[in-house]
Image (cartoon, rainbow, N blue to C red; front, side, top):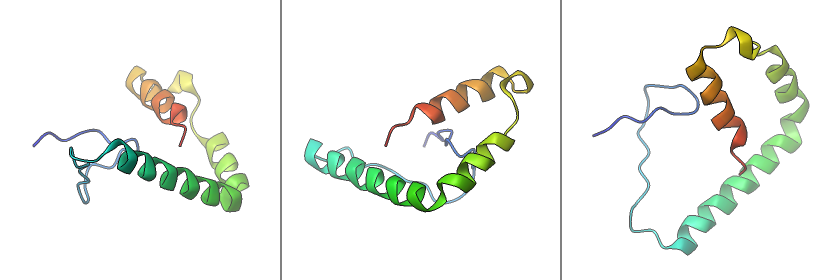
Length: 78
């Protein structure tokens, strides 16, 4: 089984597999659920999250892999 790098950087914990047999409608329902969850979290924690992100190291202090990981994480729109 291949270990994929998680956006969180965690390397331990429960594996999460997505069923290859989902219909497009089922996959879309999950995306909508995640959108709703993100919206609720952001409505409650927006300011603390913004403050946390300001504290993250600047890109010039990051390795190329870290910069790419951050870009990929920031591009997620769900």
